[in-house]
Length: 513
Ligand SMILES: C[S@@+](CC[C@H](N)C(=O)[O-])C[C@H]1O[C@@H](n2cnc3c(N)ncnc32)[C@H](O)[C@@H]1O
Image (tube, helix red, strand yellow):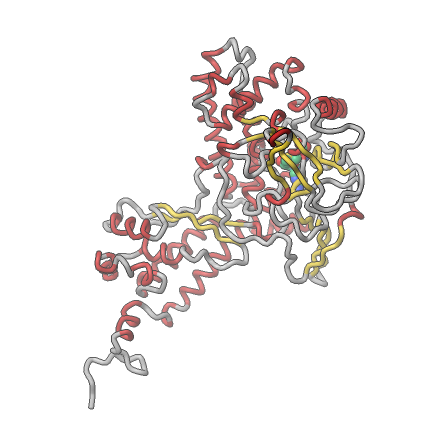
């Protein structure tokens, strides 16, 4: 049986909404945790990623001129916060109040590109590629671009791993996040090469300034970190001002080892921000509701001076957050490790196995996200048993079993099959663990010491989370290995069904009188 490949998802699904592979309850504090109101520790400093004050003032004036905000009665305004810019409450705001309404004429989406000078060149492009080209062309126009006030407040970088130089990436050596980051950058590069050859270079009159791969990566990073979840893929859109909203996260501020209490600040101090969707909607406004607007509400009561927070992407793992936004959640239930399993084409039973996998909603390659503290994904064991099936167990692959084979795979098939899956998974865990540059214990020491800085903090958090999950998987299969003698396998179950096993487990060959 081929070793499971512990690799990330393919990068081809970038910018499409990801499935939610596990139920995350972000707002239930784990036992032993105390949550305190965050208002006492609000920080008001200008973040290193923030634009100059004059750019923010110009942006605000531009938004007022466009009629999207009222400078005198605005509920929120852009303000400097530790992560750059945020939406800051201008007065106390009750929960559910609309704080921002942005008309579609101010969004940057496929329609904006289509109506622009480069629109005719972008018809066949992926929406993100077309919007990236638009952003870069308008940026190069400088003050001459009508979008200049907005483009001028976009950060030049974020802490996303997309923007980490080699030295910083070496801190995530061996992680799935590193493979995903490399995959994403390769994907951006291949899209750039295509669009450069097909659109940019043949139309120098429309693209007088050079557009480079780092420029294109910047645009990709902006789109990934600023587009709202339902405004991705085909509906991709940037919504100025609304895109300054911050993600709500818990922040561990104090760890009391003796009492085993983690004091957390629930930054938004609301216990009901569980879905991003409830915080915003697109609706019709104006005569006959013909004009679309993006309407953002605050999901929590805010005091004057506080930032608007919403929940970003409930289903994203810490690695996804690090790649898309450049931050991680300190709580372990955002940690995930993806096991990639595959039916090898060289398997003599490839065709039958593939047929069985497909009849049960799986494919030649299957991805299983293992989450900290959760049991293994339910389809993982049957799939593993299927992949490992062979030898004297191969009769289960015959067509007469096709309707019942999955039920059989949900339980141990034979000692040999179960032993194989334990061995290959444990070997894969060991091999993956040997690829990291540090041990869990070394990382934990670093975390205890603190003051790691943002990017190293993310790196250590990710690598420790992955290694703990690999340990969790290895432990689960070690326990299973130690139980192999006590498990009931297909043949015994079958004999029992036929009434051919006695009370002591002995096989009854004939009735005795
Ligand atoms: C939607 S934008 C918000 C506006 C952004 N702060 C700015 O200066 O333009 C998302 C980006 O804001 C920052 N951000 C948002 N929520 C954050 C959080 N909870 N912790 C750290 N950074 C955050 C990250 O840089 C992320 O990529």
